[in-house]
Structure formats: C-alpha cells, structure tokens
Length: 105
Image (cartoon, rainbow, N blue to C red; front, side, top):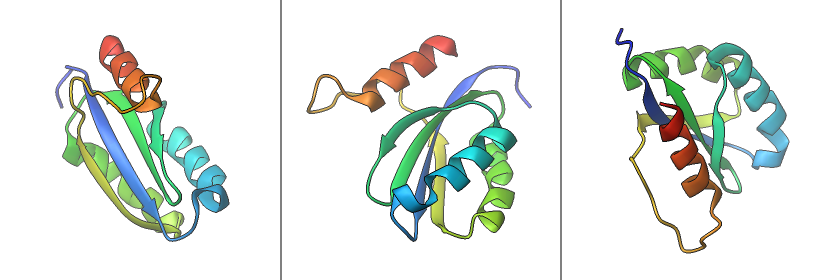
C-alpha cells in the first residue's frame, strides 16, 4: 500500500430514493471507511470523495461488505478523482469539495 494520498470518487446508485437510504448508508460508510466529502447527489445516487492512501481497487474491496449489509445499494463505482472540475453553476458542491479534497491530499 502506498503512503501517497489520493482522492477517490465513489459513486453509489441505490434502488430507492436517496432520502430513504441516506442515513443507513452514510452512517455505515463513515464508520467503516472513515471521513469523506459528500460531493454530488441525485434522486437515487450519491458521490463521495475520499482522501486516503492505497488504490481504487483496495477501496472497492472495503466497500464490498457495506454493499452486502446495505441491500438498497444497486451498484457502485470507485475511481481516481479528477484534479479539477467546472460546473454550470459557480457555487457547485462537487467543484468545492473536489478542490478541498485535493488540498488535503
């Protein structure tokens, strides 16, 4: 495992609307994976940013037990986050939290 910090983007799609599953998933993710930045969300999806060492594959393996316990998860993707982003609206949470995450890394 590398000591270098990376920013990972984790997108989670749920079978139900986010409001119905947010507490169960977010609480478990925070307890089992540590802190994260809540970057984006939609009706039934959330994207979180993690600052940590290791690889996207290692983080994905840590997500697997959560997806077994939180049965409302339909699918998830783990990737290295881009260094920057722009959005239609200047006050966009994803752009803000992405910048913040990379500053921490």
